[in-house]
Image (cartoon, rainbow, N blue to C red):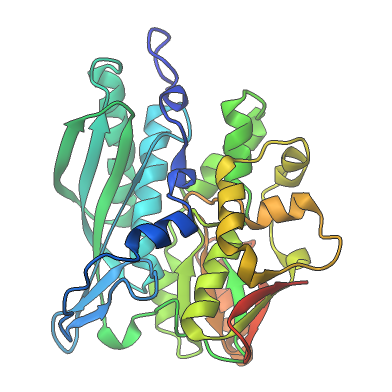
Length: 350
């Protein structure tokens, strides 16, 4: 079901869609630079110090609470699919810490004088369908009347304290494995301009609504050292977070990075989000590109991913185990895309 003809397209109500709505990394860093730092209890295993995917609070020797929130404006016009995508994206941060989701709260801001209650209801139904697939309830939430349509979740999960996977725990010699192909932002830019065909739309929905269920199993592997998900800051931005957090040099083999079918061609045709340029501005100083690097490849490297794939670092000996976990969960295009090494923190693309 799409938005009724009498109502505006959902994407027309938003100045940016999906994880492309994120405040640019450099601007966010400046905003947070002078914020007060309250003393952190020792039970807080993961806070804001390394820009990780979720907060983690130790409850006891066997359990830690994973807590996160994620919400954004529409990336598609179908209200049910918008709800599905937003919920999948929010729950991903629990999986990215190695946690198992336990419940969610809905975050809802809607222009109630513009959208019908039926349309708003379909958005919430889409989110509920994903939570059912993840085996968790939406136990509450909060709603406001807003100018732009906003939907997402507060997602919570549990993880054994010893299995928490930070984005900063990569080790020299680790290999990087990416679970999903890139290109969501590019496809969404084409969709907004009515230039994405039906097959491309189906690929986009399939990619953005696939839950990152390998997370807890990957966290249980001793060979896996760090885990994150690739979302609004693009592959370059999130790989750079790993490099900075672990104080390592990360190298990406761009030719090995999986892409959604058709994404390269659409990027070459100019369907690139504004967030891509903002992402590049935020990481350019710490990224080394090869001479003559194709601008299309740069756009793909910085393309904001809504509900993107898990990015794991593991020992070389454990690569096959990691790929087996991904494929057992249906992530057939999971691929080795780079490595970590001792050196100045930064990202090298080859």
